[in-house]
Amino acid sequence: MSIIENHTVLKPPKENYTLWRYMDIPSFLSLLAESALVFVRADLFEDKYEGHFTKPTAKLIDEFASSIKLNNDRNKSFSQHLRDMFNNVYLNCWCIGQHEVIHMWKIYSKVNGIAIKTNYSSLKQSITDNQHHDVLPGIIQYVDRENDFVDYESNTLQPYTIKGQEYKYENEFRLIISGLWEIEQEVGHIKNVDERNKARIERYQKIPVIKLKVNLSEIIKDIYISPYAPVWYKDFIEDILPRYGIIDPKITQSNL
Image (cartoon, rainbow, N blue to C red; front, side, top):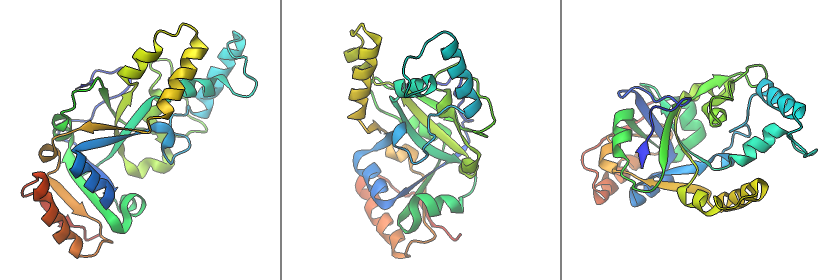
């Protein structure tokens, strides 16, 4: 496993960029118990436009496909077909910024909230997984989905580097895994393109998440507890961390 930082589209943050990962207590306990970051398949995200082209971009793709009679499906546009073909994308998301974001507490963790504060260098160094997963780091670009054109030709992962302006407050950075080596090996021998894509989709639908092993001590340096959480949460977190080898992290109850 390696992090690919010289990608044509995806750009990594600077080494010292501060990153936040907001989560609820069960997700935090899962992180501790499994020493693994969870990557969720992109089509399972709440944002219904995740992985979609912007409207002008999709229009251009569909017009080109129509001009060369590339699409025979009357029920689905060619741009939609492209998205279906790349349902093998898994995401692990962080926020960039020096300070907490109150909206992130409200949306992602609420009363049961925990946030890990780290930096890109520590996150990168924390990954210990030896599976055949190339991890791509990328900072999200916020666009007007109705009017902005996005260059789709340089790389097929481009739709996963953008989000609508309504999400701009997240200032998101994400790690991306595109394609699982074992599945691509399984379907690679299927010569018919349509059959191969169908087999690929069926296999990825059975894998909603991927877990990537990390060194917890490297990644967990600062922990923030939700401003909405009861005060005893801090004692609870302090008590359980040593059981997982996390010694003397800085634990802060948010005062937002």
